[in-house]
Image (cartoon, rainbow, N blue to C red; front, side):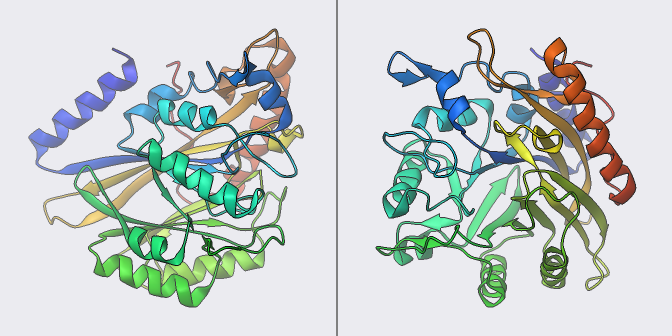
Length: 358
């Protein structure tokens, strides 16, 4: 039994004895498939992602619920990387095997393969019994899928997912993409609460690519979501990390808001200092004697993607644990840049005090 499993078991036992409830959520950023990744995973006419997520699987798999941004359609051949992505089904299997439960599909690449690619992605996720949100095969499918309220270790958490756009490609043939629209978001939040959600999590694809600080549009939309009483706002798209805040809600004195402007890349073949990695966020939900569910605290770990070499696949590692001589210095550069941003701008969201190796 791994140390992570032992910690989770101990925490559960303590919760039972103490008479309170807890749940652990994990969020990661953009899961991408560039051509180099596809080439490295190609095996005997198929794709093999062995080893991709082994290093972070212990913490993802013990979370009560883990969320990943699937920034690629998933469908039949041809499988392609940038600029029009299309990943094989084996990539989803690898993410699911690592422990991810919820796949976000509203992003700027979701229509890279048109309506067929969008529907294929949904079919693949459905065939594996995986939760997903953000795109739908038809209006009627959206009506059936929402409100999305997940029972996570006794906590009823509502999820929503929106994107700023789809690279100029418009939905056709009846498929639905949830774009950022304040009237729709407000209605969706209200409907999700009415369906029993105790806590609300809105995941947003927004911001400027490669910018380490949020823009005015992100800040304004975050303010809007805070005013709606959203408990967790999780951002993606810039392909680099951006600051995190855990602070009192300015509109609801009895609530707090956890805000991540960008988690950066989870796995990709991007090559600049700040795009080689991202953050994994751990969120603790808590219900005490008053039975009121709250977001109790949050922290983060920094991840780094080591490219394929010597016949091995790409690997996602904790950035502190990168030992390969060819990549250790680059991991340190990424760490230094990310920590400088978080140290200067984060509000009450510290780096995790231990690594998985510890």
